[in-house]
Length: 224
Image 1 (cartoon, one colour):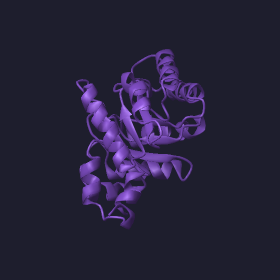
Image 2 (image 1 turned 45 degrees about the horizontal axis):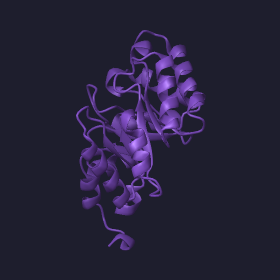
Image 3 (image 1 turned 90 degrees about the vertical axis):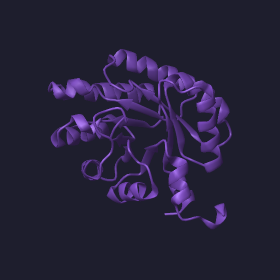
Image 4 (image 1 turned 180 degrees about the vertical axis):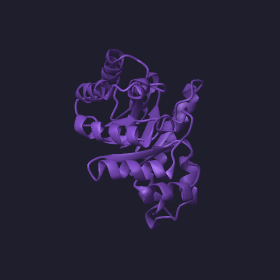
């Protein structure tokens, strides 16, 4: 996979609490220069990024219920509405992990469906936080995400007990088939990591190391 092909799969990520406007500006400018899929940011930066990236073709992908997923469904819905108003083009939402662990999958599915509805056609990526779930729970969330109309399932926030791993990506791809995208996020540090996740079934990669990944990737003649 060439650098240009890989670039279109990357959500360039900066979701640290201490990220400054300078950090977010650099994130946007790097994403535009490299022709990445999107920038993933905390919701407060949505409007700023939408303006900075206007006309570049790079999407703005704010997080919802991040990083714990423990907000009420009402708050997540309002956060989504606000993100849409502020120029979001995609959304990364964290499920209510505690509800899944408590045996309330119907609640989680209704929450996902509510976010998808409020998103008004924008792609919603459902973050499982796989490090906290059993394989059975991971499959269950993948299946409910498909039923609820989500566009992707995603491994992790990068703030949980583990990041992405190949077994989880393979399991998630098997669970959703070709119906949904699979986003691997958390711990992707180099081109070899990226290719391993792509081969396992990932169609989107969330990483703060986009520049390193692309520097290591084979060069497309158009980008030389």
